[in-house]
Length: 483
Image (tube, rainbow, N blue to C red; front, side, top):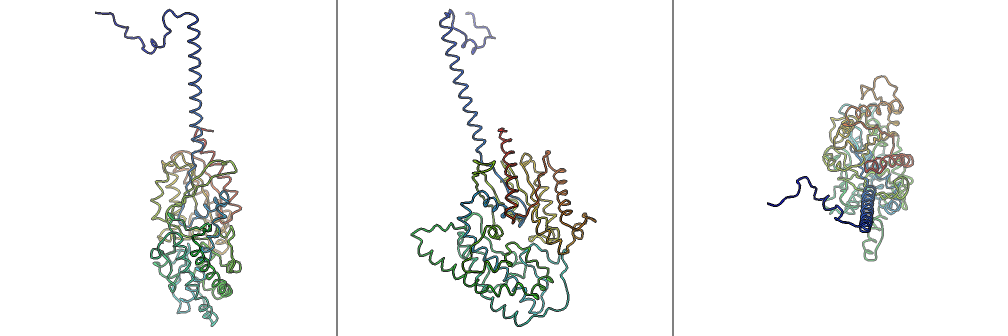
C-alpha cells in the first residue's frame, strides 16, 4: 500500500508553492509575473467598484406625492415641472387653455344652478364642487330675509345659457384628446345641472392618467384637415366665452348673488380651479394661459400620474427623478402600496384649511382627521422605515382666508382649546400634532421635516422645492453609500 499525502495538506497552497529546485533567476521572474497579475486584478476590482458606484449614483430617484384628494398633489407636480422641465412646460402650456376655460364656465354654471333653485322657491342649501361640508355637522347656513331677485337676474340666466353647451363641448373635446371614445367621456349634458344631487356631484368630469390629454401643438402636414376643425372649434368656444364676459362679471359681482352664496355656505374662492376674479383676462378671444393659471387649473385625473424629470441644474444636476402623483380618494389608496417598494422619498400633503370640512366620498369623516390617519399609516409603515418623508402643510392662504371670515377652529377641533384663532397659532398647533404622530409611530427614529406651503404660489414653492430637492438627493446618495 503506497504512502498517501498528509491529510492536513492544503491543495491550493501546494499548487501555489514555488517549484522545487527553483533558481534565483526563475524566482525573480515568477515574482514579477505574480505582481503584474495582482496589479491587473486590483485594476479590475477598482473598475467594478466604480461601475457599481456609478450605477447607484445614476439610479433614478423615486418620489411619491401622497395625500387625500384635493390636497395639492397635482399642483405640486406642476411646480416640479415648471421649475425643472421648462421646455416641456412651455410646449404643453397651450393645452391647458381649454381646462382653464372649463374651470371658469363650470363655476358660472354652478352659480346659475344655485340661482335657479333659489328663484324656483328656495331649495335646501346646496353643495358645490368644493371641499365645504354640507349639513352633517360643520356648517350652519346663514338665514335672513328673503332674497329679492329681479328681472336682471332672469335676463342674466337666459343670456348665460349658452355656457351649458360650452361646458359640455369642452369636456367632450378634452376627453377625446385624452384618448377616450365619445361614449366613454363622463361629461355634463348640455341642459343638466352642475349642482344638486350627490349623485351628480360624484360625476365631476375627469380624464384617466394612463392616457395623455395634452397636445404639444406640433402640427404635421398630414393632420391639416383635423387641425383646421379643432382650431375652428377653439375659436368658436373663445367667441362664446368672450361674448358672455360682461354677463359673467355681472352675475359674479351681483350683491344678491353673493348673499345667496353666503347663506348657502358656498365659498367659490375655496374651490379648485377658481378663476372668477380673472374674467376680464380669461374671457377674451386671444387668451393665453400664464404659468400661474396652469398651476391653479383643476382637472380631475384618475389613476397614477408618472412624470420623469432630468435635472440640469442645482444639487441634483445630472440625476433623473421619477415623481408619482397617486390618487388620494379613499377608493384609490389601495394603489399606493406597490409604489412603496424601493421608494426614496415621500412628499405628504396635508391641507390645513380643512379642519371644518368633510370628505366628499364620506361625509361622516372630517378631512383633517383623515389627514392625521393617513399620516399615521405612512410614517408607521415598516416598508417605509428608511424612506425620507417630507410634510407639506398646504393651503396656508385658504386657512388665513377662512380664519379672517370668522370661522373658529375650536368649534371644530376641541383640543385646540383657548389658543388664539389666528394663522400663526393654528400652524404651530397643526404642525405639533403631525410631529407627535411621527414620533409615536415611526418604526425607527427619523427627523421631522415640514414646510408651510401654498403650492399655488409658484415663486414660494420653487424655493421650498429647492430645499426639498437637496435633502432628498442627500438621503438618496447616503443610502447608496456615496456619502
